[in-house]
Length: 167
Image (tube, rainbow, N blue to C red; front, side, top):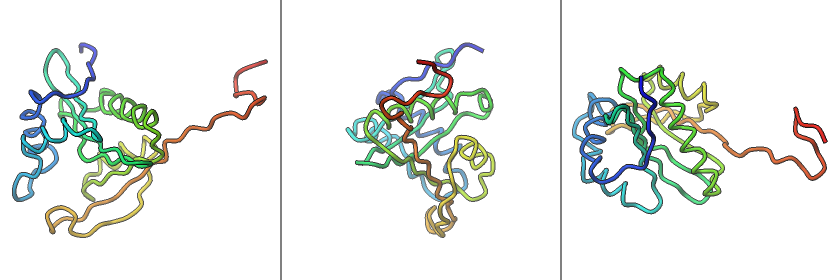
């Protein structure tokens, strides 16, 4: 497999992101919440990063994360099934975490369907903790699980050595 390319989305990516959202995230829910126009608004928003991953010029994953003062909210995150378990999701999350740290963000929050066991496992692997169940979160019908992760990194005090380093 060719190495994945991670980049910020452009409005030209909006339709494909919206379709992926519809068939990978919003499947089974009435209506279409993340339609192309909403994705374009997210791409253009100053406080939002919309990230895409391509393999051989084909969009295989995306993420939409909104930035607040100290918290970020991962609104959408998906990788096409044929490209899951290849490290693409982890690489996208690392990219988003670095962007959040650079923006002074301390915490990333997200919600996912309670029956999304693969997603739960993925986020647990990345260090996210389950914090709440939210009944009716998805169109008043389905319960969501909220997860959160503190992304701040310890900075050694002056004069202290970092493990594995010598003076």
